[in-house]
Structures are given as C-alpha cells and as structure tokens.
Image 1: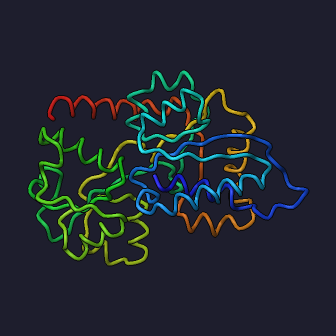
Image 2: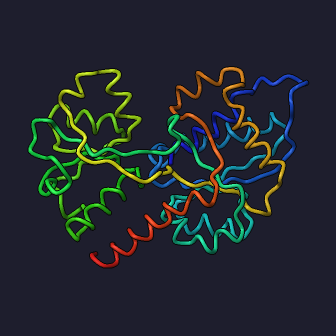
Image 3: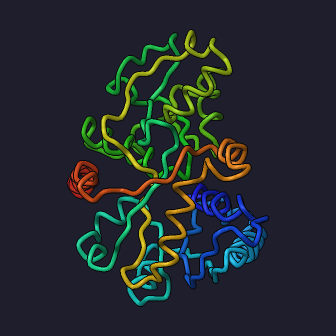
Length: 297
C-alpha cells in the first residue's frame, strides 16, 4: 500500500509552484490510509513528515486536506461510514467481503495502472535448471515473495488450496519474505531460492536490464485475471470539489510540468476510474478464494 502515499505525493507535488493564473481547487476533505504493512509502518518518522508535507501542498491549491492513518481495515471503514473520512483505499478482499454495504455510500472508484497494460499480471518463476515445470512441482520447495503484496500472496494461496487442498504456508519448505520483487527474482537467479512471485512489470524491467535472466529463469505459471493493486473510492457525501480536483489532476499528470520525471521515479503509469462492471471477474475470484479457505483451512 505504500504506493498510495506516493501517488498522492505525485499529484499534489507536481505543481507546487503554481502561479496566480493557474486553477485553484477550494475544497475541504479528509483521506484515510491503512498504514499496516506499508513503509510508513516501518519508519514512523516518515508518517509525520508525509502528513505535514501533503497537507501543506494541498493548501497551495486552495484546498484543506487532512490525512489520517489506520492500523485496521475495520476502523478505517467505520470512519468512512461515520463520515469522518471522505476517501479511503482498501485491499480488494476486504472490499468484496463488504461490498454490499460499501456500495451504498461509495462513489467514484479508482485504482492505479502500474504499466500501460493497466492491470497487474503475476508470474511464478523458477530456475531453468530446476525440475519445477508447473505448479504441481512446487511442494517442498523454497519461495521468495514480497511480504506486503496482498494480491500476489492470495494468488499463490488460492492455487495451493485448489491443487493441494491446503494453504501455501503448509506447502513450501521455506517462505522467504522480501521487501522488493527484484530481490525475489535475484534470489532465483543466484539459486538462493527455488521459486519467486513477481509482477510482469518487474520481470520485463529486470530482463531489459539483464537479458541473461531469460536464459536462467523460466515462467512456470501466471495469473489469468485482471488484477488491481487496491480499490479507492469517495463517499457520496464528500465535497464534490475535492473529487473533481483529484480526478482532474490525475487525468493530466503527464501534461504537468515535471510530471514525467516524478512518474518514472515512483514507477506507476496512471490513475484511472474503475467501472463497477469491471469488478465482476475479480469479485468471483475472491469469493472462490474465501470458499476454498473455509473448506480447507
């Protein structure tokens, strides 16, 4: 979830030196973020700095923005229902479990595209010299996987429940948590671990930097669904001016001065509105996962 903070930093920072003739957004809003498992949870000073920074930058647009940080999905959602926050970001499993209630008060859904493909694709990779050729061969092997990537972890867990009728935590000889996908990939490259889960974007980037990776690593499985990193949305009671400001700035990121450098630095492609009908496939996916967990765990 640390990407969420980077996105808002990008949107609000790009035009900090606005001149008097540029558009101002007069709004008052409170945005809620889950901090558990993010970089702000590991470095507490960063949370304070980020809060002061973003709120000051928002004021340069004529807006009054307050950021709140949460350790619990339930607490964050309760504040959303009680109108203490105007916009929140949730992980997809929590959203789908509570979708019927959430949709009564939620509008203007959005997420981020990590590449031009918009949706995230995950790969399960292994050394070409290994005898691992498909998912059925992973039992008793070691794996590197990013500890704060809910989507990637659920994908592997669901496949394990479908294939072995037990959680992936019971399948591998070692689950090695890492902070970066590139580290997970290099662990396979240097044969420190048997397997790793990485996104297509990380795979493409690393192969471009080091083409020999393709000679030493193979993709043994990949996701089929159109995954999103998270789901964000506003309250139907939120100040419309804050919603307009958010999406107008998001839509024109690459037209703003200095945007290309910042977007490249933060490694995301764009922010886009999510249509409710596009969530049907993912809703079925997570419902199936919930059923499997209850059946085999």
